[in-house]
Image (cartoon, rainbow, N blue to C red; front, side, top):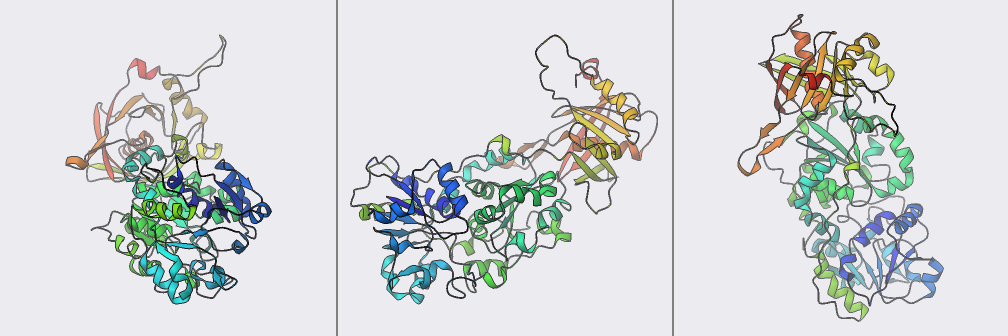
Length: 551
């Protein structure tokens, strides 16, 4: 069996089909790279990463294969010998590229790519929805008898993974924040091409403790730009906490975990809609969007994103999002794709399918290392009123007015530390190197010395644990702030929500600045609104153990 691969995106689609053949030692899989794509370098690297056996194109053309699987109709597939099955490449046929093939036709419906010598290249053309069969037949009647509805194996993997939502959010460090996923296809009409500054612009408007930003980039764009240059372009947003999804599997895991998707006309939007996630249009696809397609209907119905009103547009919707109805125009047989494909593929192989059932593989949960580090510095908008302190932490380069700067010692740069009114560090220290000689400072020592080293500092603090900090104001007497987790929701939806204690430090700093004085009576209790969650912060005199905690 030969997997004919033209791009990394096409390979990823084919890999989602593998459970059909798992456990069958009668089937041997070989991969070949279909020449002619500008994205072939990453395709070859993706095959190598999968650990698959790859054969040269010349060898693939010379041999006869029992079955050929491909997820792109482009290239000289007519040179291959054997039954060919063309599988879905994305969520329907919503995008046409004017510079190639027939104008206004997506490649999956374009006779220019589907015919070889005047006859359909594919023995079977697997489509995800009956409407796609009708669209194909309208353009290429001779291909109708080769087409059948098989659903979408990638959607089935996503549906099989819905119970992993909490685990994925935990691995990403999302917590109680609202996960906003930006999705960009490839090409001149993509979200990143039309609005390249959008990730950084949203980071500058969405408070860090209320929102987590993530970005899905089409594998073709990864290939065209390169991971190095892509990270360079996105550096401000990455430093502000943006999660950049890996091009295989992780993008789908983000959809399972997300709360809202900002999109262009790429397939990710319809996969999000299949989960009934709220969708917001970042751009419209212009001349690449196929009129009357499910994607066109979706983008016409959802709100448009304006950066200045983003916190309102991306907040929890007042009612159910109701985007699934658009996905139902693109996907049929949800959850049944592999069961549908298996007998058809084995019929072409001339074999009886194995007796064991076939099941879509759940998506892997990202490793904890994939969670981004908290930003090292913030511009903090804060105010005291209505019995609580409201804190919104934003990147230090935001153009919005703010109350103070906060910076983490040991991670922020020197200029950020020198300009910060609130300095903090985290007490986790690496183990001392082998040997007898080592030294450390206590939390009390460090908070006292910070004022001499950084004249602009007004509050110095050490995060001792996920709920406890030691701090002092203007070289005064140190005390502790204990941040209580909040209980949210009701019934089976009840959660215990923790926050970054450094955000609570900004609340205490703001309170101390609002009510200056040499002494504040302790104990005291503050209410801090951090993101969308109110936490109680208890201020108490520090114990000897807390003062002596090593940093």
